[in-house]
Amino acid sequence: MLLLLLSGIVMMKEHIRVLDWLKAWAPVRYVRVGGVFQHISKDDVKQTLQPVLDVDFITADLQEIRSAVVSLPWVADAKVKREWPDAIDIKVFEQHPFKRWGEKSLLNEQGDIFTLQDTGAYHDMALLICPRGQQRRFLEIMKGIEVALSDRSLELVEFRVTERLSWELILSNGLRIKLGKKQPLYNVQRFLKSTEILGVERMNAMAMIDMRYPNGFAVTWKPGVDFDWETNDGSAV
Image (cartoon, rainbow, N blue to C red; front, side, top):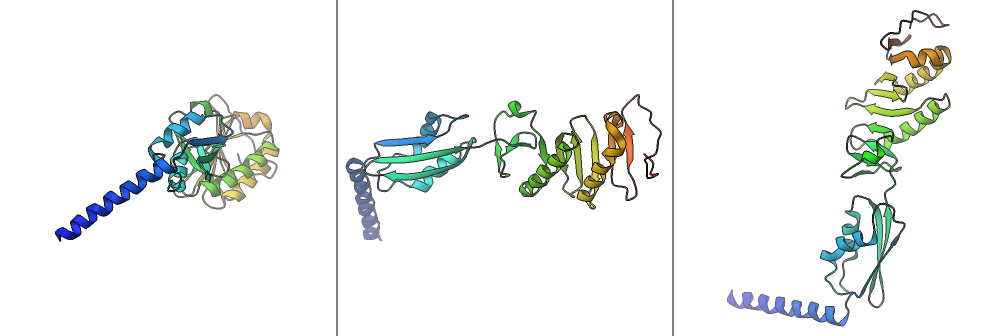
């Protein structure tokens, strides 16, 4: 047992000697960081890499280096490669905020979530709230709804999907649209058709419109507004 222990110690010392020899013989002399930088700097990347670059050029773990770079909140991806004889090249791809996600995070256009210390600069960006893990699916749906609304000069500011998959939209004029969880896309289409009947004045006077009724919809008016009318198809509003 003692011989095995001593043998292990000797092997460990030899391993350390080899690593020290490699560092001296084939050091990493240069770390080249490239990319289009808007939110971070090359110095930010190099500072993050300090703990993982105390190695030699040959045994440098490129995956570990990449993981360290990608751990930065503003980094979407990174490509790392060796450049003989003594350089590590790193190309950094920054995140591009597309929508707000929850209270403190953002989504890129692919639906990847990233969290910053302060998202205040993106307060005016449209918000998506949905079950985690389904954000890519609902982001694509959100894009389609935004296009359809913009064709009617309406702007979406929030798209909410509950854990029970009940949908709700909030527009820039403050109108809240309840779509429910049964045929929500069909209810979006019904709402879009109803905008032709409602008109701009009535749309701006509404606080909420509930599309969960199969044969019509219910309206809650903003304070001080009192409309009493029927649509052309006879359904009550």
